[in-house]
Length: 68
Image (cartoon, rainbow, N blue to C red):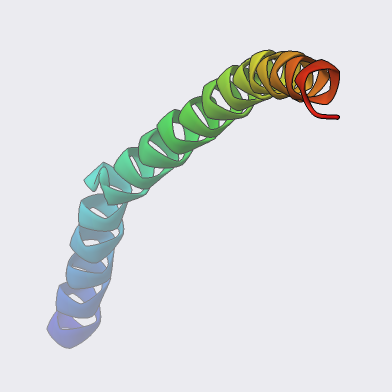
């Protein structure tokens, strides 16, 4: 009977320690931060891409008018 109680208590303690760990929460937080950085980076690169395209178009038209 004592052995059963000891095993039950040790199983309970293992369950409590597993529930109190916050490793999974940290992983989720890092994933959310990574997703936010990815979204912001994509938005910035799209905006910069449009500006770079305008500059190349301007340079191309300037060179086309100078070349014979």
